[in-house]
Image (cartoon, rainbow, N blue to C red; front, side, top):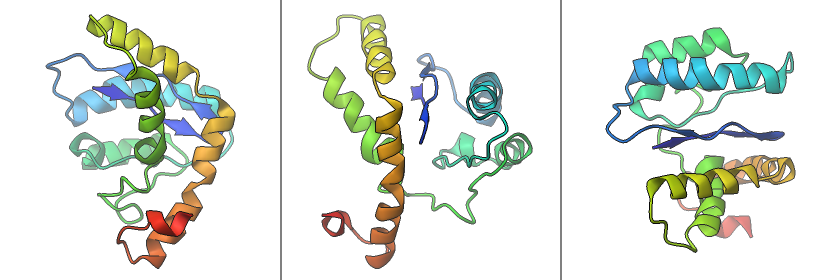
Length: 158
């Protein structure tokens, strides 16, 4: 499994979780939030305001995870704000994965290590300008989703 995040001003580190590791709330809070996201965000944002938006995988939606995030970060979109099934509105789903897939899937990798290296290289090539465009596209996608009353809305984006 791979964890990553983007902002309008850049991307986080790419984190690989080894095969067989159960990503429960305890693991996610310790190894992703506390060890990676919190230090990265403090360095990247400093005192500037920002909002955490994440998908609702079980480890992300645990009450203890939500509380930790609310304690650490200036703003968190919880389930009162953010729908649980929202891949058409999640920048990682509607854009970033396709960028990585396009770059990485052109080659067969003999080892997992080689694939990881290719992913890191491709991830690091995503520019702050690309991140800004991806995030800036979110309000337009949200408006189209609302206009379509939650139904398919890609045709409204043209």
